[in-house]
Image (cartoon, rainbow, N blue to C red; front, top):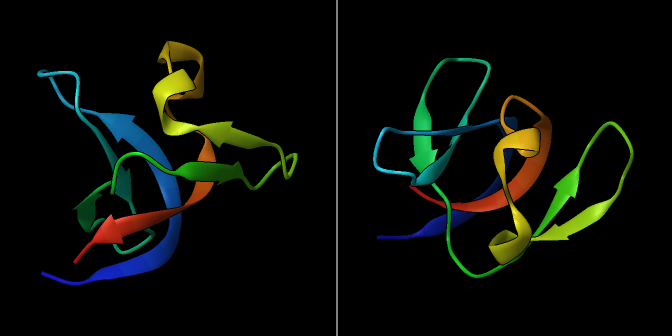
Length: 65
């Protein structure tokens, strides 16, 4: 399995796992741990600091593809 840096919306599933949904509606699991960039503010957030307030935000993150 390889990884790539992708942009998309940060979501989580019913098991509490975060993933990225791209504009083509593909979903990719995040590589953890990592630093994620919020594209709206260019703020950087550690993956262990993610919580419900980050769901739906557009981010740049490394994902498994």
